[in-house]
Amino acid sequence: EISLKIAAGEVIERPFSVVKELVENSLDASASEIKVELLSGGKNLVKVTDNGHGMRREDAKLCFERHSTSKIRSVEDLSLIATLGFRGEALPSISAVSRVVLKTSDGKEEKGTLIEKEGEKIIQTSDIAFPLGTSVEVRDLFFNLPAREKFLRSDRSELNLIVKFMTFASIAYPEVRFSLIHGKRQLFDYPPVSSLKERIFQVFGKSLLERLLEIDYKEDDRQLYGYASLPPAGHRDRTLQLFYVNKRPVRDRTLLAALNQAYRGFLEKDRYAEAFLFLSYPYTEVDINVHPAKAEVRFKDSRPVFQLVYRSIEQAILKEKGVKKIYPTKEEEMGFRMEEKGRFRIEEERGAPAFMRGKERQREWKDLFTPLAKQEEIYPHVLGQYLDIYIVACSEEGLIIVDQHNAHERILFEKYEEIDKEKKWPQKLALLPILFELSPSQLLSFENSQALLE
Image 1 (cartoon, rainbow, N blue to C red):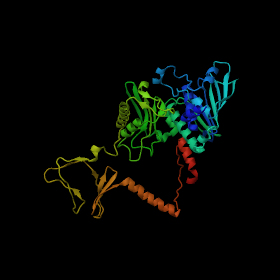
Image 2: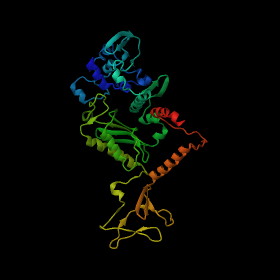
Image 3: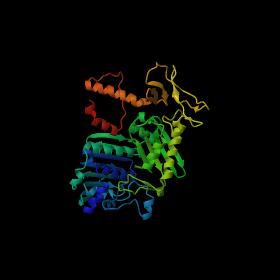
Image 4: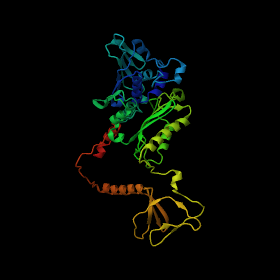
């Protein structure tokens, strides 16, 4: 019993883990409808109901035994895993640290099966009337592990983790209906749709969809498809960088590095590409059996993976008309080349300062600066604008380079700081209401801060 609880702790860390394991089982059972019900962020209740294949009575009894799985039959199958779950750890681990009621029917037997467990103890097993599918009700998570229960976060924090997972799962399976209920409130209900594009629209709205470009690139038996940011659009953080390997949501440094490298120079600093990308890769070339949570993968050789992702995104970006780099590459940063070694100097004349030619040979220059309107002779003296980002000026002490975006942000910050001190916030009524499209996760974050905003 002690060893089972220790093993369960590796698989089931919090209510999110329960939802993840049960929803993945539902998807493996080819369910077209998955309903998740929660109480207290999943700490008091997690109930997952699906209309998948269901189980016979004999299989229902076995599913609570450790490492009992119908998804692999030989050692060779471990290198060809096409299902989300395969270890046979989910239900045994969940039932070891909670009170579980399982109801299931495969639609072939006359009656369904009910099994009720409390920790390691089976309370009852009986026949019931139940439609095709499975329902797993998990109550009082960690009731027999108080030390683990103490480390659970607030209801809202636990709920937010579950909402994010359900959102990511719904993106991967647009053909499946996903619904999530917390208490008496339905957080979302996404009907099945025929494409990834429609599901992104369902979850994130039109505004996000309009700033995405389609990715579809194939090399032999490897393919990357999905949607990613159309430059210069970007997000303030990496929360909308979603990668799936063979439809499994994963975190992987190689994939993220390739994505960020492909967008290098196309996005403003401190902005990140939004991405909903699916990598189809040979099962023999990727190991998903790295950790019990199955959130990480390991590629046999990560170099071709990096190249595939980088090339796919880069080609899609370059095909778009009017897209250009905001920040230059290292070769472009100079903007000119010197045909001979030597110095150049800035001479001051009555007009605006100008870059002077060398005495021996003329240096070749590209258009580095956009000249500003002629101004009075004052210091610092503005020379021009570089790449529509930097203001270049000279003072009596030397050359000054100012990031105009940062400077503008600083000006606004000081302005609002002063307004905040005086508690006199300007208000202006809009003629028409301004609508914001929020994902369920964003809506929860807004509700958490609503009192502060009011």
